[in-house]
Length: 261
DNA sequence: TTTCATGTTCAGCA
DNA sequence: GTGCTGAACATGAA
Image 1 (cartoon, rainbow, N blue to C red):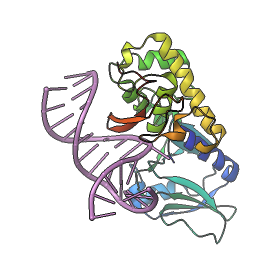
Image 2: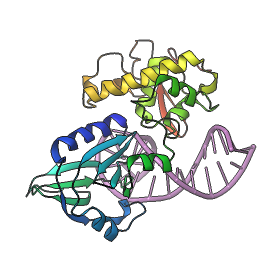
Image 3: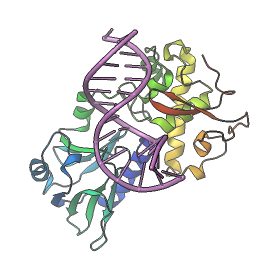
């Protein structure tokens, strides 16, 4: 599920399904997904609260509950869904919240890399976790000044949520392919103008994915996301894609479009 | 059967 | 302090 566009799609879904609903009952099926709070205080903290808005910062979701906020990170395989009465829960439901209209809000997560907790507000959470600005909202100038101050590989910088929040492994590869920048290029050796363009490019790529509800098959030609596999043809028909590990993550790139530093 | 995966964090080391 | 690597978390898909 979980990079910025996927999380935004979930946010919009929840906005349509459960905005204004009140949480009437809470069942924690797996306490392992709770972060920094036990099942009892979590349950009593949200029971009886009304969902007044649903926000997002980077990959983090926030259900605003009037005076406090439930923070949700989908990890690698997390999902939030609203089920009608009698509809069967998914196999890996970790948390169920009954709503005032009889339906249920379910957190499903096979791999349990996600986490859920309570915080004072989105702003407080972002500050205490030192998250960078949201990749969709950040001004290109700030994108450039933040990323350009690191000597690390640009791919690692894009993945580091402290610099910019929301870009993950897939979209980092896409942005670098669009920009024709090699993943190991040291960020601080890219000219300021290139970093400005990269900021704009990231926002464009993320927005394009949100617009098609992250169904990559609906992306126009020219996107790496559609052919992100070893040995596939470069979307610019410039040869075959290759992969390498950068920052511990597999990176796909075109060795002809993206020259090594 | 083995390997890899859209994420994050931490230990160990240069 | 900086930056890199590998491991850990748990499960399913190829």
